[in-house]
Length: 234
Image 1 (spheres, rainbow, N blue to C red):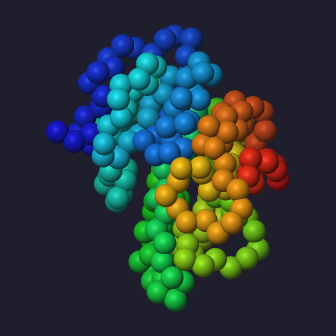
Image 2: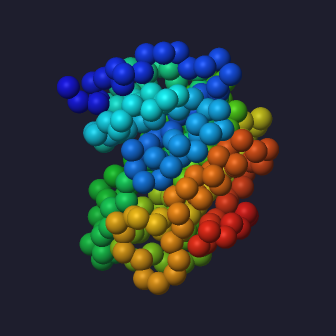
């Protein structure tokens, strides 16, 4: 049985009544794991979306399996876990796979795929929670050069999608108040298996604390860019 077919069978206890619920997508990744740990220190019960391999059972956490490769996968996730998601006050979208490809080899299919994973998925989840849950705050995760006026090498489809998500973040913040929408964009994480030419890396724990501070704060429509651990809100 895969995680797509079942939620965590080891955690059947109801979330504590004094813990608000947060959905964290991409919860089994490097940053996702740090976000799960940080959320619990802020008295949040975590619904952690995972892809294939289920992490160990954790207190105040329930793992929700999902395959987001197509529209049917997103719809199935929302249908299978509708009752749980209907209690969520918060969303942290950490999901968004990065595919590297030389710019000269980029095809329209590459753009469609990256838009699905990095725009369609988080917007679909957000729309569901807006309609069905007491949603109050959303944080989308970008990457270090989102919002810059520049060309991109090797990550063009991903960068186009994440920049579109930044525009959506600011538009949602303007039009869907009082729900808060923000983006946090870190540099490459320490421990990430991604080449980085020079510069500093940032510990995932530091990014996670920034994300939780933004999620639980009062700002909306802000892009928090983290450069080597130094935060610049814009």
